[in-house]
Image 1: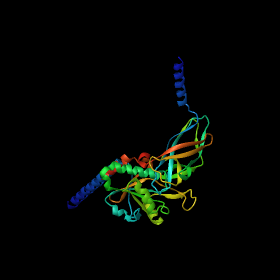
Image 2: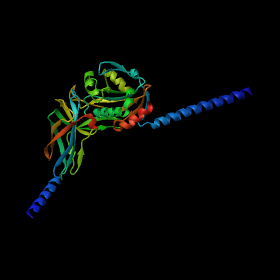
Image 3: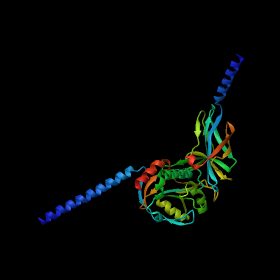
Image 4: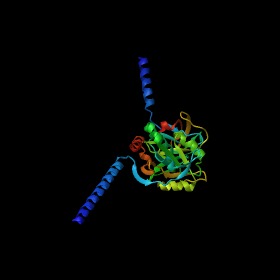
Amino acid sequence: MKTNYKIVIGVVALIVILWVALGYKLIDLKKKEKFYGFHVGKQITDHTLTSQDGRKLSFSDLRGDIILVNFGYTSCPDVCPTTLAKLRMIYEQLGSKKDRVDVLFITIDPERDTKEKLAKFVPYFDKDFIGLTGSTDEIKKVADDFNVNYFKEAVKSDTDYLMSHTSSVFLVNAGGEILLKYPQQMLDPEKVAGDIEMLL
Amino acid sequence: MRNYLFILLSILFIFISGCDSSGVKISNAWVREVPEGISTSALYLTIKNNNSENDSLLSVETGIAGSAEIHQTSVNENGISYMKKLDELDIPSSETVSLEPGGTHIMLIGINRKIKDGDEIKAVLRFRNAGNKEVTAVVRGFKKSE
């Protein structure tokens, strides 16, 4: 009789656990469906890079904020300025909520993009945007973490070349997880701002 | 009576002038403003070929950049944006080709002076058949560019 009692309790406990887990998963799936961006769901490593004003900045320093991350280079005439202009529009959409959102522009051309050059380029789009550079090794590690690819093209000399690169914008949530990805061509400021508002 | 005829002829002349659709027409030319110290930018414009024969844009010269190249931005299936230099850009007969952000553009390399919103920049476009066409492009700040 005692054994039967234990089995019943065990089965009930199992059902409760499964029910809670399934419910949680369904809520999670529903949340993912609600977002405009593509779900990524990857925890990032705490990288440290150098900002345009010479400060060392780690992702953990920004923990608690939403972070929008874009990889590019300052000699980029077309895609990077277009993306940064759209990031600025997202900022404008957010109004006062933008205080809880950081925008990072990480160079994939650290050989040419010094912090001085980033200081001329990045704040032009918004004074609060942060340009980041580092050693080629440091940049490679961050880019790998975001699954960002880049390589030189049309090389004419050591200083005259183009860069091909992943141009998506990534949304890192307050817990340091790369939650969403927006390919450059689907960077709709209103919709991205909508995703951010759901997370704030 | 002579006055009426004069007015009629004048109206006809204006109408015919307005309808002149021959040649290669360039419109909506603008250059992306860049902060001082940044030496690359892009020229965008629209080219309409009203001729009965195909044409090609061969080269571009401006007074503000060391060189100008025809480039095409594309995004591959992995989300990588890349630029390809074009030796020439086809402008088919009776078609309009638009050079816009995120697509085909004239890359300006080695900008030698500060360019700011509202500045006017002269550019000369060389076509295979239509020859040289001069155009004035207006510099647009990023808020007006997107």
